[in-house]
Length: 538
Image (spheres, rainbow, N blue to C red):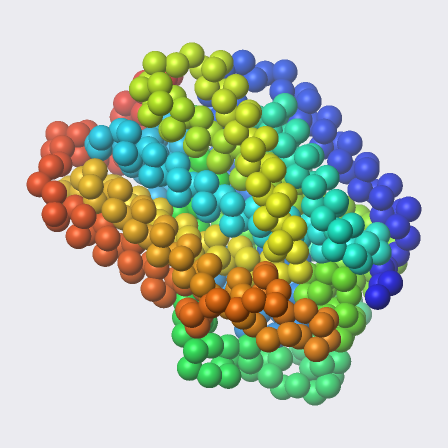
């Protein structure tokens, strides 16, 4: 199929302009990267408002823009459930973890988890889960890059799309190596503003074509789908059987509980100077993210009405092509180029944020505190973080080539399931359970992580789904093999309770716990007392 939209030359030019602008931002920010705190936490120099916009930039990934719009265009109501789940998840993050984590930690999630535990086993476990969650999230972003550029440049063979994914990976590694957290944060701020502005313009444009009448828009989408009332009915995608209904519950649990365990979102709370700024940043993030998810409803149904499900599914990027195709339908080549470049900047920014989180976790937790036992020069730590970023980039490129063609909102849901299973139980136990101890933390992280990853590997996501007659390919990642035995696409309904159970049993089987350290951690997490001193001393 030789489907591409717009002019590849115009698309590449607009892409190049956006990449050049972001590279200038990163290079300017890199001039101030002198210490480990600068590289990992942007020198803690960002205001609550700036950090809130950056969190929105980190969170509104390619899944939010491309994946959700496509899911709504094809599945209607069920696609919008992704938006609802991603947004409601922020309440868990705001009410339970944001301020407490910022007060207790320094650079990474493991700083909090190991505060009153034995350092080495807990930091190793936390770094392992951080790398696993980052890997699954990176898969989604890389798959999004492949599909987007395939659509815009007409690159339809998988080898060409693999080259595109490799170029995205190389660019993101450069961002992290040069800019650190400061450069990454500024790229995310710019990208968040561009993404929300672009979505807002398209939303007004779609509504204007339907007399600013939402009912008229929904009716047009139903007509375009051949009168399928299921576009407006619940459980259109998930109501076919008891298995798919269970899958829906599993997906909802993963979406709502996953955000509070995402390492790259948690790390953003360390870039602000005070606990008050941490609260402000989450408030700003919720407002911007909530606005954006309301816009996705109009964009999704707008794509369904103006482009049509058949054309969306027939495009090289599949479901992920809905938003770019809608831009082309509304404003032709120029709007398509701008929206696609914004989506591309979205992928680059989120991937850079994930990479710096994973590399910081390895360098700070494993290298500095486990291998070197805390006796390491900050410059050596940053050097190891940069080497790790290159390795992570290479792994992400290979994984992204295999994941190419999957719905990226769905792939992100897998990352959320792993985060909710491995990280959330141990974070909540550490912050709120006095008797929690090292064995409980290690059991909780590894138990939740291994359960989630095992169920994903042996699920229909990886192998065993029947071939789609339209594309001639199986929706599974691996073709022509079937070794799945777990029936659900998302493991959250099993793996999240497993993470909590492993932590509880592990803690109960060990008598060791540090009462004095828990009291200190409780005071610091609730008041912030001592947090600044510990931060500056590090």
